[in-house]
Length: 128
Image (cartoon, rainbow, N blue to C red; front, side, top):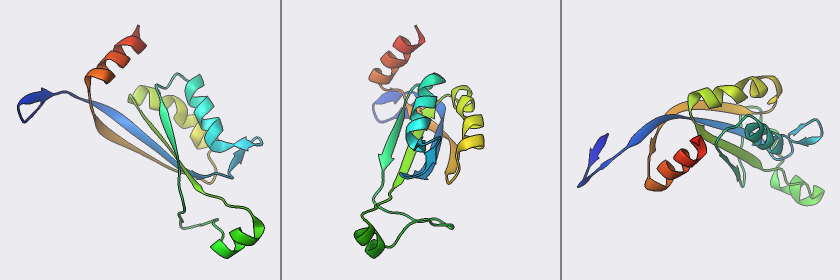
């Protein structure tokens, strides 16, 4: 328990897995970010969020400059997949990522999750 203000707030240790990739990165002909979503569902992870970025770059950037994008009509954008779950659940998807997540940058960090009334209810329902 963490005492804050007038009430007590409960936090739970979880893991935050973040996968940075690009919209055009494919796995077996399908967008990798969509494959990761389906794999996470198949493995029973509790949820994830995919965020579409506007632009970005990395050490080995595959981004085109704006003029090339304008003339080619191809606009590749970064995709960020965030999964927050218990470590034992996160561990289920790591071998898949290690094997198949080319052109990705993957981070894993422990995080404190505020256990709101809504989240407590959802976890109780999920665990039934």
